[in-house]
Length: 384
Image (cartoon, rainbow, N blue to C red; front, top):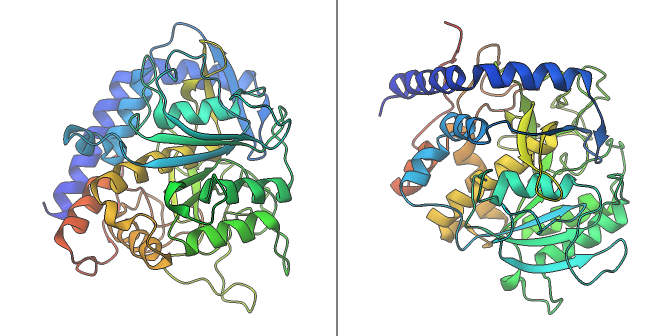
């Protein structure tokens, strides 16, 4: 399939999905603008919903990222383990009742059984593995859940670092074979120059073992503090920013600082943020049996974790085989990503390398020649 044809196909699919969901989106965004409550370290906005259809958001995202094409091939994340470091998970929710929990640890209160006293973790889990009225991108994936955030969404770097270590080796026997393939960090803190922290160190160590670490870019947006947050700023960690429904970078999404300095010598495919995905007013699971609409780069990070699960199911040889596999996969995602209107190419400090196209990445992985493709020059507009 030619790049022009792929670009046209994305535009057509986006337009079709937007027509279907138009009225719902307008209502959700208007209500969200009025009812704002911050949740979790990455600054998520949420509001309860009743009666709104779940599948329109999910269909739009699947078509936009080509996840629908991998799902049509039978991929649902089965055999892939994702570690969710968050406020916990509420397995009472009917859409999460069938989730396979590989391991659980409560770093806040030490409780033995999974729970969620904040709702943020349950919402992120829904975007990845829900299977019911809400449908995650990879409902067949298994979860390790590390409760490292308090009910108000705050947590310490030391605790998060410890939780990341648990993700890598849940039983602490030194063998990462029972650990996560992907660590999903819908959290972050302001980056501090000239220093490192426990969370960043743990994330870096995880990537050296071939574990994919995905993190929110941050929500400081136009009040930019100079870079994406931490641990998203860690070189091999995948930092994810947010897009609105018009596929423009969301106003709150953090900008990366990729200027060549002694303290910041980033090179491809590690320029920050790496990618942007939808992150405004998306419907997902909430505590109990309810649903919520959420906004923030937390959402975008969870979506990317789900997309990675589809690719790792299709290509398990890229899972946990060292930092080289992480670099190779990031290269492939970079080379097959789709730039959006207004984005500088090949990398933009707001948009990253563009919009992930998982089916295109899948085809390159199948070809066995990830160097055959260069960054795309086509710029897609949904308004033309």
